[in-house]
Length: 247
Image 1 (cartoon, rainbow, N blue to C red):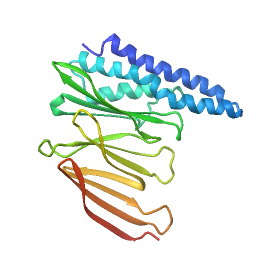
Image 2 (cartoon, rainbow, N blue to C red):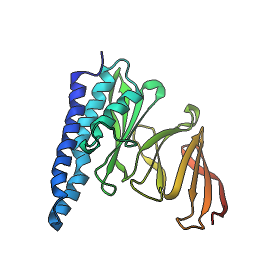
Image 3 (spheres, rainbow, N blue to C red):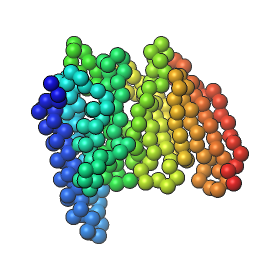
Image 4 (cartoon, rainbow, N blue to C red):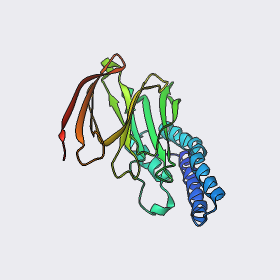
C-alpha cells in the first residue's frame, strides 16, 4: 500500500507549521520595531527544531510502510512539506536531497528549512534498517547554514565510502559554495570541509573529489582546481592547479 495516513499526517503537520510561521512572518514584515525584528529572526532559527520531529516521523513511516518506497518519492514528499505558501503550487528547489546506500538498508536525508537567505538551517540524518524496520541512526543538526543541499557518495564499498554534503549560498551573486564530508559509520561525523568557494563546482568520480572555483570575486580572478582522493576514510589532496587570470 502507499504511504499510510500516519506518514501523510506527519508531513502535513510539518507543512502546517511552516505555513503558520510564514503567515505570522508576513505580519512581522510590516514592522520596523527592532525587538519584533529580532523576535522574527529568533523564530526563524527555531523553525527547524519545530518541524524536525514531524518530518522524522514522516520519513520513518514512509520507509517502513511503503513497499515500493524510493528516494525520489521521499524527496518529493519532503520538498512539498517544506515549501512555503508564498510559492503557491510550485515546490521549493534544491532544499532537499535523499540517497540510498548499503543495498537499500541505509537512507540519508538532508534538507534545509528556508525562511530567508541569512537565517535558514539544515538537517542531515541517517536512517538504517535493522530487523526489517527503519529507525533514525544518526543526526547532524545544522551541518550547513543558508545554503542549498545536495548529497553524494564518495568512494566504493571496498574503500569505505563517505557522504558528501555540498551546496550554494542562497541569494549569493558570486555563487559561493561549501562542501563537507561525513563518515557513514552510524555517527555522521564530519571528516573534512571547505568553504568560500567562489563560483564553486563540485564533481565526484569514484574515489575522487574535484573542486573548481575562483580565487576571489575580482575581474582578474584565477580558476583553481583541487583534486582529492579518498584513502582509508581520509581525503588526500593529489593535485592543485591554478589557471591564468580571467581578466
